[in-house]
Length: 459
Image 1 (cartoon, rainbow, N blue to C red):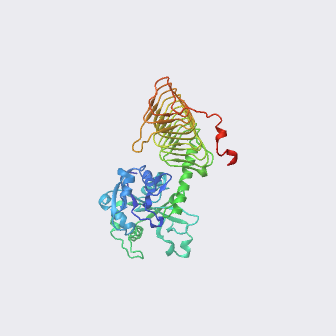
Image 2: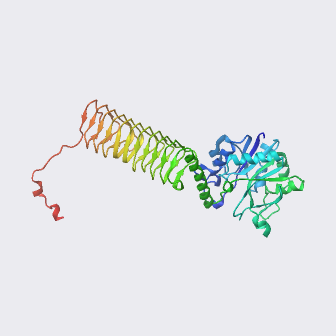
Image 3: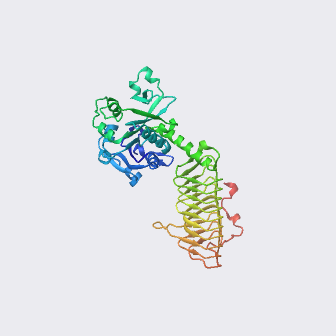
């Protein structure tokens, strides 16, 4: 079949989105729409990939990096004009060119591969990717004479008979490359929009007595173009269903697939259970035999095997085997939780490591700290890490005990096998095997009740 050029059209402004973000950069399941397109295109046997961007397209370059070449369409003069901007890159290339839009995130490489194979097999100048729509309203109709495509007629220009046609244009084409760029020089902008339409190349092809063919794709949903927020939500739902089905087919139990939200780059091991209303974002990796309970939100984090998360937030962090967290706890960036660690309810951990078998039961803040293994952290312990200007680190050794309501004022080093009495505010280092008590001594005032000017029952 040989190599193919690919041209991605991403210069449109997308005003119907009503967004400061470029339309093709709107996210679908954790990835920009144009990134979805490029990811599928990269699976083809490409000789060149060129993306057409507008003069304000630096953000698209930042998103896609050096995975594609770029050409700037300085003026928005239509799709035909956009493709012509790539003549310097592709004009002398032999073979075929795939043209598609950057706002169609649902196309798969499998469908594109079938289209290209069909085009090469029939050796036509143009092959249009089409689909059968139950409701073709708004789409250009494919008018055929048996296998030969006569024309594409837009909804507003269609006759009553043409409006009954259910085969629609998806906006994806494969062209003989030399024919494409020759024909682009022959089209004009003699239309209501005063634009140069790529579809006008089809008429030029027919006038030259060349055949135009169409390949009917299997799944109409893939052809969805996203021009507004409504279509964006629809595309996201379709993509999410596709992602969830893939994980379930790979041995993941998703209790409620319609209300489970997993980004496309997330990886999940077998026999893991995902409950309803869970968000797994970014490049999160979940191991085998994990349980992610309802209401959890995990982004760009790594959970090893046999980890349980109960209604908690985890971001840019790591939990090792057999640990658990929640409910209502939060791992902020750069938290590293060891093996068999228990993080209970209402615990916040940030930029800290917690060693194996350590227990942090409840109502605790651990920031900028290194905790060893087999430590007990009592209720209400706070690692005081900020002096108003800088963050400081504290270290707690193995087998230590931090009593409830203790304040660990950084920077301090609490050695192995140390004991911090409840209610203490620790500002100095604690040595091996020491007990640290840093609180005011209790004083009982005898018969003070009788001297109270207002007794509680009088209030």
